[in-house]
Length: 542
Image (cartoon, rainbow, N blue to C red; front, side):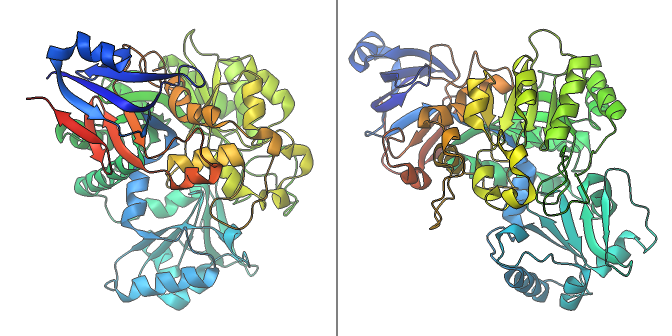
């Protein structure tokens, strides 16, 4: 394969703010040279076999989502999606319509309800779902995936009775009269249902992956850091699905696989280790959950919830258990990637990391890092930790989070600018399917700290707004730094991987709301064009 020259556009290297080049020369998946177009064309004239005219559009290093659930995103695209529905009644009607078109006895799994987006945030409970159908097992997963609502047919199919034991770290909801109300919160409780869902076939897993990766291509994503390995028939079938789709069937995609703590032994038994994998698939950090979600009042806070003073959230593990998991990761020479939303969960994770630090050169990551205190930020800044943030949470969590969390805990929360100023490297992701995958929704949220599309232009934390360069860095340099690939990805630089996202406008100068309309005209992975639309011209030399 000959060399490719890319030119006639704004080629933004991300090496430093405002740095651009006229042209880029690539070959066999790598950037060979950058510089003046005429110079590169003259020097490499006889070796260039592809000439790509960007037609004035903007070329970025390939965008990478630093935290999502790739198979789950595919499932959401394949299932009944409740995330855009603005009322309880709309959700119930959608489920009723689905029941009408689904044979009796078949399970119906829906995704994405969010009562905080409804005018009347009253939960959907078992009796509501029974009124729709007792012929179908119904499972409605909340948008955070830390809670689900089910009907009585589901309880019967799962063998769950009124005297079910509530597992540690989980919540089984009940009506005031003691009956089960169909609400299950956090993985230990939800697994009572999830473990009884109809068998997941390998074909289903692979179809979900293909669906998700195609959507990533469409949105300009060249890769992601994803956590799937413990949910789809276990480690081996899930990993085999990634290899089948990405490697064997040629859907090039940079997949960095977080390894759930319950799947680490399987990974090790099968002969894999941190940092290893295939040409596109790499094993990343051990994933641990320290707490739950704010929407479900299960994120672990140091103070009671304002809207429910009887609780401070849930610790998924005791401190001794959490430290044991971190210690286990170190025995495999692995970093940890810990879900920590509440400040007390954050504190517990820092305690564990300080007690069992990683080897030199290895970086841990704290996922979400939403409710944080200044003293915890100062501690984190002295450690080799990265904050894996989801800027879109500002748009989705405010203003309702202010009703849950007191001002004393919000001062340093969702504080992306402050984190950076304290020297903490941040990576940017979506947490799809919990939030929309589109990277420019996240970039818009980081830059404006407003809700997208709507009439509400309230700025939630004006001093924490990022520049567009800083926001794009989250999805380029930040994502690369998070998984140790910063010397080969995240910038347009000689020797780096030829992964590019080409968009239809100069995102660095447009009105911020124009970011929401940004389209990926071309997605390039390993020098291969995997998605193309619009006015980018490819000239192939004869």
